[in-house]
Amino acid sequence: MNNFTFYAPTYFVFGKDQENETGKYVKRFGGSKVLIHYGGGSVVRSGLLGRIKASLDQEKISYVELGGVKPNPRSGLVYEGIELCRKENVDFVLAVGGGSTIDSAKAIAAGTIYEGDFWDFYSGKPVEKALPIGTVLTIAAAGSEGSPDSVITKEEGMLKRGASGEGLRPAFSILNPALTQTLPPYQTACGITDIMAHLFERYFTTTKEVEVTDRMIEGLLMTMIHEGPRVIADPDNYEARANIMWAGMMAHNNSCGVGRVQDWASHDMEHELSALYDCAHGAGLAVVFPAWMIYNYKRDVMRFAQLAVRVWGCSMDFANPENTALAGIQCLRNYLKSIGMPGNFAELGAKEEDIPQMAHTAAFGNGGSGAIGGFARLTEEDIANIYRLML
Ligand code: NZQ
Ligand code: ZN
Image (cartoon, rainbow, N blue to C red):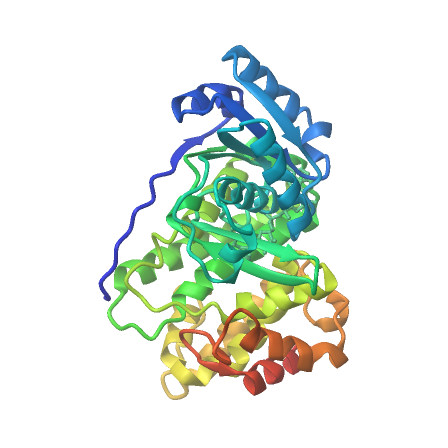
């Protein structure tokens, strides 16, 4: 295991009706003037926004609102939010929604107290300070409720880029699984896929002897494999939703990723797809990950075979472990199909002719050196080859 530091100070509040306590937590973490940030309207329709406001009113906390965050959130609304926070002397940013809303809120929280352009943080500058952030999560997926990350798309050039830094970890996050019951099945499945992808990105490592985090990841993956179909068949299954919601947080607050090299090339490749075609992040990952696995399993056949045996229950072919590794990848494909995820470029609306551009941007665009991935170092040519496996 490699050396590491780990500091994840988010205060989690989990369970039924807990969103009604939002005002109490805003107060506890120092908020007196709040920006309530939300998406395209699901929280208005469900009545959640009204309950949040009532809970702030109860604590006599004043607020301003900014809705309209789109999936794959855009920089334009972030600039608007920063201006609003400065004008209104906002001292706390409250995100009510999914990963896109939380990421947009994080960008506003960092940008409001920064003199330069907030996009500097999405071009490599770490975020050390931001206004305190609270979240009320409505979809189990991105893990932004416990992560120090935010992903924003700049309209100019449709660049989808990430920022990171301890300043971006939420002060508190409220997770009520019942709030996810209104999700359309497709969004639920996208979330499941993203959660599993966060686990795979960490599982595929070059670091030896990382049994504790291997086993944590395997346990979370097995939970997702068990609960995913249950929740697709029965969207009101609170217990299945609860397990998925907490797995989503655990998958990405990095408790499973410490002390080991991680990969993340699949996320970089997916971000090119969602930037160009505006597809859901999880749907893009469903197409990218099996292709990435097929291209790279020979780099460490035994790690892929271990995943196949321990997580998918495949039997070990000792004479030819490659067969086991491949069987595991096929199990993943079958699983993703069974929950309604796309399996190729056409189902995603992606186009072959864009492959050279996407491969170039994935390799060089993010201030990159021309190669991405911690487990498998991929050049522009490798990336293009992997995209072609998705046709
Ligand atoms: O906008 P509204 O109307 O709220 O509708 C949303 C949106 O259309 C809807 N939705 C959310 N909760 C709902 C609901 N509809 C009905 N009932 C509910 N309870 O679902 C749609 C998707 O929402 P979004 O916030 O985009 O989903 P998700 O949480 O998957 O976030 C995706 C974004 O997170 C980024 C992705 O790249 C993408 O931009 N990521 C962020 C990460 C991070 N900050 O750590 C890591 C991830 O790897 C990921 O890259
Ligand atoms: Zn993701």
